[in-house]
Length: 292
Length: 344
Image 1 (tube, rainbow over the protein chains, first blue to last red):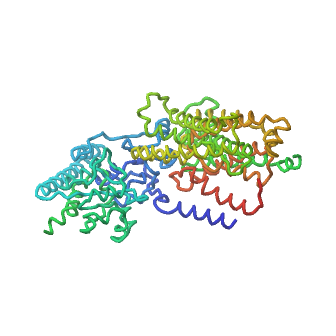
Image 2 (spheres, rainbow over the protein chains, first blue to last red):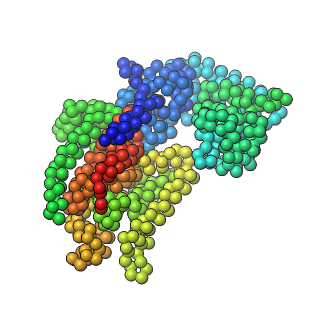
Image 3 (tube, rainbow over the protein chains, first blue to last red):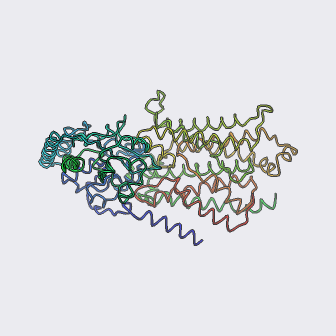
């Protein structure tokens, strides 16, 4: 029976850690927004409109203080009760939530849900989204400032891009590895756009945003720079850990020590900081050219 | 047999009371707390035809109550499926999934997630359960068909089990392949479906799964005596008048209907079909006349308990129930096995 108690305590302690135990500190708020979209969340915080946001989904990780809010689970595996327990007066979602029955249940219970307009995954589209959200939250001037900053950062970044003589080949590895199969971001992904704007080219093609690649393909792609998203990079811990990745140690990127850590949330959607992120990427991927 | 039967006296009423208590707890607690007053007022309003249920009352009537009832039926289906197959195969490691049912359902669901948008045939919210159910029926039928001997047209229990293992592997590969080619949201849906959830419960699903469970349970009880006879051996059972071939087909048919329908609505929930009949055998003996009925109730108890935990552990988020049934069920099962010398 002791073992049973130990197992139970173990399960309870595991469940209590991380973001799942966050307390609802906005119980007295009349307006209660549950926002299930990492892109929306970043824009809401950038607009300074986060006052009535009471809960988010687990994939919303920027800005860091968002992690203090209660979360209602993974956006593709939501539960109706989890959302309802936050007593939402409105759910904001970007049409990427599931499972289907949860959406049906929420609609049946007449819980207000809203999506902002569908815009192209471009800088102009992001500006339009930020302006629409600004109007909605009555933060139009702030939205305008964000658009201005984004546009000016992008202008600067694109001017830099024209001045670079070299176009480094960049490989973006997401999650690190699973059984030596790499989940790699392709030319079609948002990361592909960022790298193009930063004056590089993606090392791998693909008909969808992310694709699994074998170590052989990674070795053959022979990138000049490898970008590892936070989870994978932190898991490997050091350059020695990265050297153990099959297929990586033979690449030019590894030989020239051009392997860098990037935040996942900066690579998977466009937002108010995209311009800054492109400038940061330029610092990373054009380092060799600058040193010459 | 009389001596064994007497062991079961009092078990059914006791389990029924436990089930009632657990169901009440399951309805009361969760991400949203529902008080007894809410329950009573919701029922009063519904029965009197009064309009205007508040949100908590609607959560009780439209989400929590159907979920708790569906939990009972699914738990009963899986547990009775396990009891029937273990008795038929006279093998303690058998569970409903072993004859291909669960993997077939998983393949049908994966096919829906990966290629769903390209299907011309669509019956709304029932498309997924239907795809899973058809997958389960196809895989189980394939197991039956391939296990039949070309010469005699008969199938031995051992062949059936081995073919079941092979077909399971084949359909699991199919699920793996579909997950591999699927886009990220589709692949995630396949993974989550395979971990099981009762969060999609609604009254139509309760009616469908409930009808299949009750009908199949009544048929199972009818064949309990024959399964008891089979415990002493196939030849001996035939000698005392059991038509083995017919019994085998009937039990397999009952199992596939019951498990396929339940799995189709809630996804793959492992371990219940294996652990529940075992627990009862360890504690009370193998008389199928009592084992089947009590498995149904204990299956409901365990699944309701697991569902309650799945909603409470990461509150307000929810854990897939398949994780809870395994994490909580396995240690309890091992403790009981080690406590008692147990022979099938």
